[in-house]
Each structure stands twice: as C-alpha cells, then as structure tokens.
Amino acid sequence: MADSQNPTSSPVNDPEEFDAPDDDLVTRLAEVDEDLAEQRAATLRSGLNDYELDEGDLDLLELSDDYPDGIFYLPALPVLAIVGRPNVGKSALVNRILGRREAVVEDTPGVTRDRVAYKAEWNGRRFTLVDTGGWEPDASGINAAVAAQAEVAIDLADVVLFVVDSNVGATATDEHVVKLLRRANRPVFLAANKVDDVRQEPGASALWSLGLGEPYPVSALHGRGVADLLDIIMEKMPEVSNVAKQEVGGPRRVAILGRPNVGKSSLLNKAAGEERVVVNEMAGTTRDPVDEQIELGGKVWTFVDTAGIRKRVHLQQGADFYASLRTSAALEKAEVAVVVLDVTEPISVQDLRIIDLVLESGRALVLAFNKWDLLDDERRRYLEREIEQDLAHVTWAPRVNISARTGRHLERLVPALELALDSWDTRIPTGKFNAFLAELTAAHPHPVRGGKQPRILFGTQAASRPPTFVLFATGFLDPGYRRYVQRRLREIYGFEGSPIVVNMRVREKRKR
View 1 (cartoon, rainbow, N blue to C red):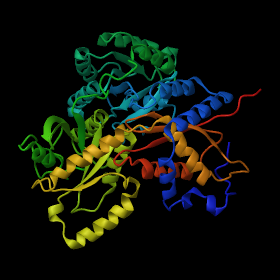
View 2 (view 1 turned 90 degrees about the vertical axis):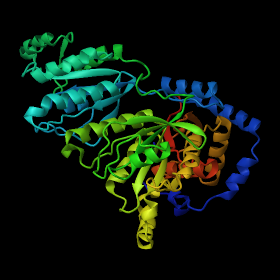
View 3 (view 1 turned 90 degrees about the horizontal axis):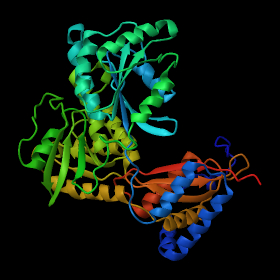
View 4 (view 1 turned 180 degrees about the vertical axis):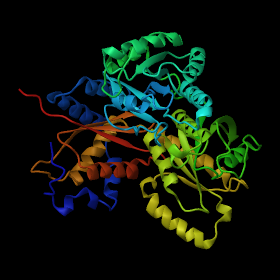
C-alpha cells in the first residue's frame, strides 16, 4: 500500500496543485465513442478477475452490470433505537455495539451528545443505531421525559432495545414506558444491563415482571452477553428500514433545517399561502415536524418543517432535545434539505453543524439566505466574506436569497430544488465513468508515494441518491487526489446541489 506520508512526488504532480480547470478534458470526453468506452470498461472489469475480490466487491460489480444506465438506490438501513432511564448504561451499550467510543459516557445521569444516529454493523448486517440519550430535567419530571423519549424512538425505529439497570430493578418509570412499548407495532427487546457476572443474573430474571418477554442479561461495560443479544435482534431486524425508506414516485420530500428563529416556519407558511405552522419570535416555537403537501412552481412537494437544532444539546430543555431527535428523523426521510440561514447574523458554528448533518446524511442541499430584505451594504460585505471562508466546502450547493416574511424571490426556490434533486438522481454509465478516469489519470497521474504509484484499475457508480462512486485501486489514494477526482467530476458532470461520495477499495493481485 502506498505511503501517504512520504512526500517523494514533485510539486507538479501534487493533486493540490491541480487548480486550473482542464478544459481540454471536457473536449476529449465529448469525443469519446460510447460503444468503444463500454468495450474498454468491460476489458477493465474483466481485468479485476486477476485481483483478490471479496463477496461485497462481486455484488457491487454485478449490480453495476445489471443497471448500466438507470438510477438505482441503496436501500435505507434498518434502525435500532436504544431507550431507557438515564444512567442505565445506554451510551456504554452504544459504544459496545459500535466497537468504538462514540457516545459520551459519564457517571452524571443525562449526559447527551449532539449526534444521536450512528452507522453500525454486526455480522455483515449494516444498520443505523439511534441513541436517545439520557435526559433528566428533574426527579419529578422523569416519567414524562422518558416516555417522550420512548415515543420518539418508536417513531424512528424498526426495532427498539429497552435498557433497564438490573441492579436497581424495574421502576415506576420503566413500567410507564413499557405501556407505550406494548402498544407499539415494533419488535421490542429488554436488555438487563450491569450483569457483570453469573452472581448478578437473578436480578435480570426479576425483570420478567415487566411483561416484555425474556430479559437478556448483558454488561455494556465488559461486553458480556451483548453479542448473543445482537444475534437475536438481527433475526427480527428487517433487511430494509420500514420507517426511513425513500418514497419513490411520490412528491419529492423537502426538509427545512436551520437554527431556531431563522424563519423556517415563515418559509413554510409563505410557500403554502396560509398559516400552517405557529410562528413566534421566541426561538424554538416549533416542536414536532409538520409534513405539508404544498403546490409550488406547478409541482406538489412534501415539506417538513423541523424544530430548530439547538446548540449544546446536553444543556437543552427536554422539548428541544426531542426536537433535535425528530430533526434527524425528518432528514432521514427527506430527499433534499433546505438549510435556512439568517443573513442579518454571522454564519455560526450551529449553521455549519447543520450543513454537516446534511452532508453526513447524503441528502441533496439548497442554501436559503433568509431576511434578505433586511440586509444593508455593510452587512452584505461581511456576509460575502463569511460565505467565501465558511461555506467553501459547499460551493456546489445552489443558493437562493429570499425573504420568508414577504415572500420575496420565493419562486427561485423551485428551480434550485429541481437542480439539486436532478443531480442527486444522476447516474454516469460505467463506460463514461471509466473513460473519465482514464483521461484524468493520463493527464494527472497519482503522485509517487514511498517509491510506489497507486493505479486506478476500474471505477463504477455504486448508487444514486447520493451519487456514490467506488474506485478499485492498487494502493491507497491520497485524500488530496480523491478530492481532485471529486472536483473534476463536478466540473464535467455538474452535480450542483448533491454531495458526491468517492469510496476506495485497495486490492492486491491474486497469488499464482
């Protein structure tokens, strides 16, 4: 594998130096004969048989053969939500399942993080893990808080894992949540946590009284019993999520995101032409997402008005914490996100975090700069500088300058949404993509690292929504070179408004 730390290449070959657009590449690709390109791609594909490929590689290659030109989608991952009272060990269990320390774990009850959803894998099965955290407003309000948390989890999840502290036993709060879980049309598993050895197992057996079936004794801290429990959960976990799956063929789903009080609800009301959502100057008035079918620009859209994502989630009041959970759920179900920014205030860390959340989710992105009618010349100059510095990583996202309050330029939102969604749906045929890679690497080969030069063997688009590409290579490609490939993809094929994912599979030749 190439050594990415060894700077043996000349500056000319440094991918960070490839800033000037290679207009000649556009011309050369336009002249490529499509039939010849397909034949060359087939030859490159057959050449991969000389390399060590795993089952995942073969499945991917078969998929690209089956869908040479059409759009296809990676199925939505099933969702496992973990719920329970504060300090029963939910975050420790999340970390154990993930196999890495992601969730914040402290002895203080109710410590929560900004992120609530993680990508996880068990025995080859990939799924989304939702940690509903432990939020405790005060001792008297705990019943309502945990019940609200359970309701959110049921909305989000295909399967619910209810965690109880076996050393404490079933509490009134636990029994309150059990009533909700029994009514839910979801598989529910009961984890009796903190069973560190056989001597503590009688405490787990006592939890049969909750009426949720068998309590599974586990120790999130030591890992005891977790693997067995996951095996059982996987038997009930659907292959494709029933709650987060994309709706294909219906009105396109638009999530409206932004900090509290940037004008999300006003935008929805103005688009709908009536007061659909409560608008109040107090930040965070909106709590639950409201799905509305609205005709805009001659098309019907499904708009989701989401509660604002708050700064420092672990200090939120309860309603705001659950609002941020629901925001994540809405984004999972959306196809394109409109991130609303208030131009009268500086672009904040919160704004950037929300944009990053969209990028992580792989959804299409439109930036709506709201309150444009309140912008003066001095603030405009500062805003331009902020956009140049803080939003450089999303220069590809369509921008619209609007006033949600007055409706000014609201009509510009529709072409921006259509452009982003068209990009999100785009598929490049395998022949064209490999012709692009061949021309690209011929003009600018990967730099030599540690005396070796990684070579791209074959490329294919693994999925649309978002456009996801896989490169088979003989060695690790520098991050700078992968960014170069992404940038040239945008310059040649557009992709305005859509993130692009470029994954890499390093493969070695078969031993004779």
